[in-house]
Length: 308
Image 1 (cartoon, rainbow, N blue to C red):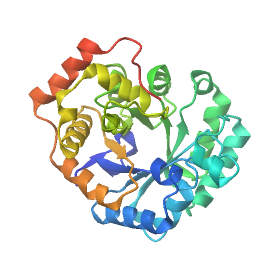
Image 2: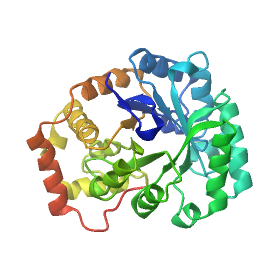
Image 3: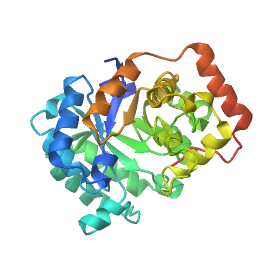
């Protein structure tokens, strides 16, 4: 497993991380989550990213790593309060709630769910630009850092919000979308983040493998935009064997200058080893990488901004 330093935080992180949305939203059994995370940790993956709104994801992860907390660079996100019942929580986000008092309570709940007294990075979860400009809201994260509830603070954002999150200087890390179907950040955001020594965490690094839906568009809002884009990008490699296409997509993202770690979620323990093997293959050959970039530049319209 390759490791990199997460910007000015100095945290040593695996280039491949685990994302907790799938295990939360898909109501994966605790024993399966235990197996997935123990497999990941045994293989050297030390980054785990989750959020309070991922249904029961925080609690599942907290229990799974409770005896191995010291091995983990643990990250979670606040800004969307969880819905009430289990079925409601599994359905998706609650309404965004950026009230400072709510955020402070959310941080407390996350620590309890995760069975820890601190996370390594506490992040805002897709805040609107107006929220990022509200000093009262930013102060909540900074106070959490001062109290020791978070070692560092970050922001998960895209497009204009990501640019502001970098330029405002309030955050130690940035989590952003970047993939074969989402390349705005490469030119617009990553150079700014590098200049400020911000660690960059990539979400959705294989574009949700949207091409696996074939010619039938996915029904969910989370995958459909990438499916639409891939129809127009028409990369030849997405028609290869599944593992070949996944490997190219992941290696493209991990090989992009300025990326520190990429978060990939799964509900299947065997997928962990497959993703590790893909990452271990290293960056794509320069010509193959540039062909993907060139195709994006020739096809992508201006409205293809970072997908939230």
